[in-house]
Image (cartoon, rainbow, N blue to C red; front, side, top):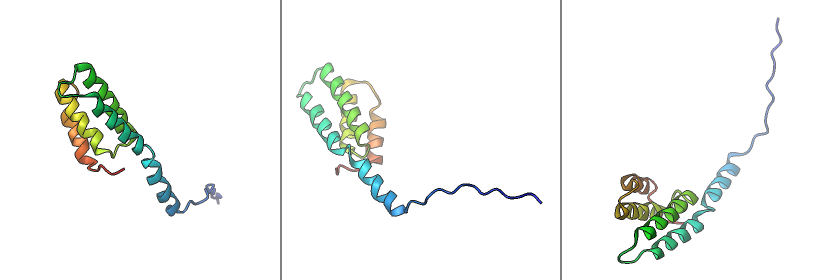
Length: 104
């Protein structure tokens, strides 16, 4: 009769600890994201240049990468893309709707 091998066991991490850790970790970049959105908005005026819009889009992409839940970053990105005539404003608006929050 063959012997059964036991798989090594890993210590169990209480799920409460995991849930307590991950939301805080996910929110770390949100203050940075908010600052990047403000910087992007400061670049534009009533008649922004193409360079200002392009630089603003880069800042807004960084803002969304730092905090995906930042709906403002996605919303303003869609506006900048539409004004510049490049990118995918519909995608940015969809992401904004998907992450519909402006709380940090």
